[in-house]
Each structure stands twice: as C-alpha cells, then as structure tokens.
Image 1: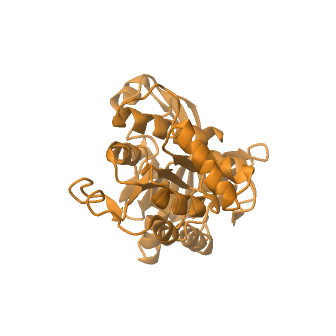
Image 2 (image 1 turned 45 degrees about the horizontal axis):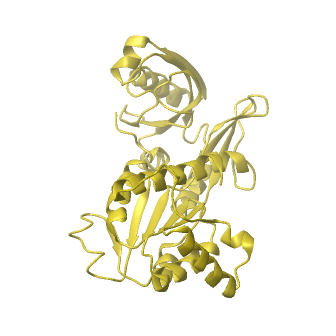
Length: 322
C-alpha cells in the first residue's frame, strides 16, 4: 500500500467540510509490524480512508472502530496481531503486533491543535504532538524531545502515559554541481525520502535533459541556498570542485542548521578548502561540520558508487549523529 504522509492535512480538510474525521496512529509495535510507530490512517465519517497503519492487514477493522468512535466522540486504543500470512502478503517475513490510537477530530483531538500542527508543518517547523492517554490532554511542543526529533522517532514518555508524535519537516537535499555524481545521487536520494534540488548556474550542466523532472536552480549557489532555505532537515552536498561555486555555498551552509554538509575532493583539495575558510573567519568547530572528502570510505570509484557512499554517510549522520 502506498505510504501517505498527509493524514493530518486530510483530517482537517474532511472535518472542515462537515464530513467528520478520525486520525488513527500507530503508537506501539512488537515484532515485524508492517508500519513504524507514528504511521497514520485518516478516516472520514462516511468511511473513506487515506493512509495506512498496517500495510493493508487491519485497515478494515480500524475503519469500523473509527466510525463508531466518531459517533460516540471517544478515544480508543486498539491492538492487533498481524498474522504471518497477512504479514507475508504485504512483503514481510513474519507477523507482529500493533497498537493504534483512534482520535476523532473535535471530540478528542482539538481542532485548534490540529490547525496549529498544520501551520507548523507548512512552515517546516519541527513540532511534537503530545497525547496524554490518561487525562485526555493534547498539546504541541517544540522545545523538548531533542533526541526524538534528531532520530525522527515517535513513542511513549512518562511511563507510557503520554504518546509523543514527532512531526519533522520532510527531508531535503541540495546538490551544488550538476555533475555525473549528481545524476546518480539525486534519484537515489528521492527513493530514500529526500526532496532534492540541483543547483548549478552553468546551463550546460544543470539542464532538463540531464536531470529530467528534477528541481533545477540555475542561480549562484549562495543565492540559491538562501532562496531554498537550509534548515535542520536539509543536507547540502557540494560536487563542483570549483571554489568559486563551492565556497559561497559553504558559507551559507556553515551558518545554517543543515544536518549534513559534504564536499567532494581529495584530502589535498579539502586541506586547501579549510585554509580558505579559516581566512574567511570560520573556526575549527564550523569547519569540522564538513564531511570532506565526501561519503563513507567504501572504496567507491564510479559516480554511482560515490553516490551510494554519500547517501550512506548522510543516513548515518541523520540517524546516529556525526
């Protein structure tokens, strides 16, 4: 089943259209459950659904429970065991167990909280949705759960009394330099869940023919990064080898909260880069944020192999820290 990431937006739209809406969220899993904690399904009052909590195994049962919960205006916590045969049907080797929180919009999840959540998501502001399953209180917070934000991991706090749903902005990748490595890296990154941008003022490189269907930004790199906006869910990868293009981009990236900054080049090239940055006023802590030479050392030689090494290093930094 296709993964649907806009369940909160759809829930608000259905509620405001007068159809009624319920959000169903995976709050706990055991074994090889089909969807991770935080996965969501939204159900309208007339039974239409978008999203998934199990890859198709238990959605029908959740819809029935959600419709009844909407009528009664109550929270429900459902538990399902996913059998081996059902799990295999959605591409797993074995089954598991999931718990699902069912929240009718308005009666359980306050509409104003949902609206503020939509505003934060639209503004690319990381926010956590707290649901106190004992008291019924719901609120949004942004100044706690640093580890959960970093790991993009929803789950329980306060001895299981409070479920914390992490709503991070979608991942983005800004590639400076529309070279052969970029041609391999961009589609790989898209598969891994990134929204990629390719920045190159050289028309011969950053062309539609070389990057069909991709977001091409033909501006000078520093101007492009300022326009795109580099935040804590953005990776910046510099592939041009040309200081006239790479260095302006580095100046913006190093002043940003980008979770990953990588720059192509040999150790000798990187040493020269470090010297230039020091002369430009960047200190050792700033410069240490640059992964250079870029990518994990896996012996990569061809452009696609180098792209694999870069994406692997990005993933390690995102999930485990630098």
